[in-house]
Amino acid sequence: MTDYEIVIGLEVHLQLKTKSKVFCGCSTAFGAPPNTHVCPVCLGFPGSLPVLNRDALKLGAKTAIALNCRVEEEIKFDRKNYFYPDLPKAYQISQFSQPLSRHGYLQILFDGKEKRIGITRVHLEEDTGKLFHTQDASLIDFNRSGTPLLEIVSEPDMSSPEEAYLYLTALKSILEYIDVSDCNMEEGSLRCDANVSVRKKGVKELGVKTEIKNMNSFKAVKAALEYEAERQIETIGSGGKITQETRLFDSARGVTEPMRSKEESHDYRYFPEPDLTPFDFAKNILEDVKNEMPELPGPKRKRFMSNYGLSDYDAAVLVSDKAMADYFEKCASLYRNSKIIANWIMGDISAYMKEHGLTIDRLNLKSEYLTGMLDMIDKGVISGKIAKSLLIDSIQTGKDPILLVKEKGLEQITDAGQIDQAVDQVIKENQKIVGDFISGKQNAVMALVGKVMTKTKGKANPRKVIEMLKKRLKGEA
Ligand code: ADP
Ligand code: ZN
Ligand code: MG
Image (cartoon, rainbow, N blue to C red):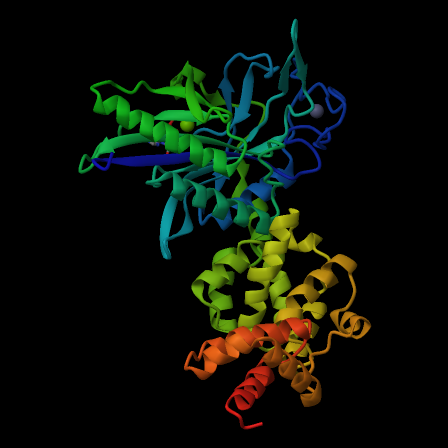
């Protein structure tokens, strides 16, 4: 196993978030009754002519810039010819020789180290219709036919399924920042074909690859690659050969199985699309788009580290989700200790969101509620322990923690008299632990602190409790 290295390259198809299709005015809305968003163009009627959607080009340009690609001055479209029932024209309008852009890269963070994964090309094309197979018929829905797709092809630069997973996560994060797609693998707005080969360590040439399809989550991509790399290594190890082919991932069984032998690009007989003339991309689209680019996750991470003194790891987690990064910054403008804010967001708040399947923009917690609560901890109004349950309470009721503390009488007990009383009782009730402490077990005091905290329902100020217990046990009070 360790004699081999794994080589992975990914092809991602992305449905762009345009209102209308790429070559006609039909709506791209998801979930409409079958064949209601169609017209002669996207049904491939003879004589109909495509008209290029400017918004699709803009979103393509945004993506290319965000992926550090060199954007071409002039772009052109080509016909990719093949027959399949979901492709009414028997060719797909795509880009072959002059795509939107090439030679980009994406940065991933692996084991705390940055690694660049090359982007070979980003090009624009149209989606096909969708087939449904029933017992005795196959049905076609052409609503999806002509939806703009961006194909993002990576270099074979990933050397483990884990890196492929990180690449997809980083890519999705960028795509969400620039708001070009819903990036939903389950609804099919993001689809990924994973190419993998293996080779003996030290060998220069790439091994024969297989292409895996049919994964519906990033985890499934990782699992499929793990299985497939292992299969290839075993096959070669036992004297067999890998055939270049397309394989399907069966997520229920966790295996890949052959689907068809892989076609080569010359099989498609690409030729220039005569109904769309070459387009001066740089002049017409690029300048607009450059001004609309938001701050991307990479630069934002660096800024979070220098502005807020966060660690690389904390900054990376916070910026991975734009809404979370925005939330953090709002809180940081209201409360001075950014590290504490980060801890709460990445700790208790993230745990709650995970448990309830929520994202931060759907979480019912105003930034001023979180920071108001942190202020109360600092002022000694509540203990850190109470704060944990107060946070959940505030999320669930949508009420201001300051109000909740008043309503429920959660203020920390700093009053010496009240703590005294509880300490007294605990000492009386726990003579054995007291004995342990007197005979030298310093730690026994913590057990007693715990009991006092229980007695005061977590409201006593722990520092005061320790102070008092120690005094009392040493016979000073
Ligand atoms: P194809 O013509 O089969 O589509 P491409 O050269 O267009 O192949 O590459 C498709 C994807 O496969 C790219 O993401 C590329 O990085 C990746 N790839 C190419 N060769 C290999 C290989 N030997 N092993 C792993 N991935 C590869
Ligand atoms: Zn149409
Ligand atoms: Mg290819």
